[in-house]
Image: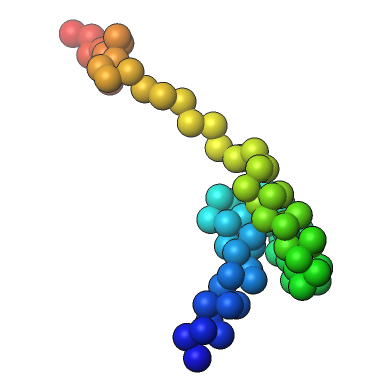
Length: 76
């Protein structure tokens, strides 16, 4: 039984990656995986699409301490 769950999770790995990365194309990747994943070529295409698609979020690095006040200045 655990083997079957593992194989199902492995089959839907591209869909799980796309969902975990919150990609806009996650529905398309899931449909490609569902209908063409059994061909192995479709599974590889879905996996590459899920891994290589640009992330919808841009992460900006923050300096260790800001050169500006963290809160707006208080005027007296």
